[in-house]
Length: 281
Image (cartoon, rainbow, N blue to C red):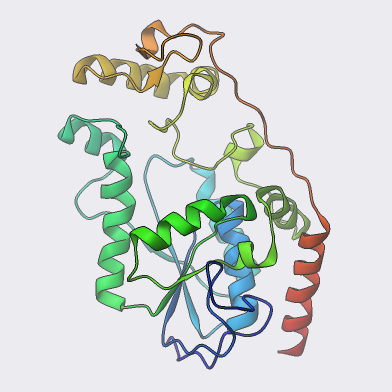
């Protein structure tokens, strides 16, 4: 059973404002959203260290388009967390492919329907049923603006951002997971900067050229779906930003830089903080 939280300890957030709540704030229920990414894993670990294992629910929204290795990574993280991860998924759609095919839409300026149907709708359902008082997301130090936009767009959500509060970057999180003895998800090992679904419609030409090399079946399926729907997910990055269908995408267009695990002093400090809290429990 999730028990009430006594307080949010010093070290996660030390002031009111854009980074989160102040020490002494009282919460009844906290949910930590685990996406099978390194950042969300470290955010959950930090939250557990400070809130106590009985004070927080860790929830993963599963999408069938994810790499199968995510199940292994989630199991490894469960052992690291010392508690199970609750798995939820859409009751309306079996996969993002089904969303795109039924909605006849891939992506636009306002985002992608797969994100809304496969992730946001499930989160909203959880919020309605469980009514959490605070929610932990793995926004990193580079994503302060994203966290600020989330707060502005979701004023009813009490957002907690332990990574921003600790100054941890994405590279810090990658290194911390590896130093915990956990093999990073396969998508990171393949050089992708995020552990998104295989074949994300938000990706650009460089991303899709890499998908063509690593997952040719996914590339071919999306190329066929583009033609069926009449919409291209990529734009020409060398000219006038005109749409480019995948079956006409030049092999050399775009770039896809690999993320190399690195670590600043902040992640070592955070690890020491976690160890100290766990040793005292």
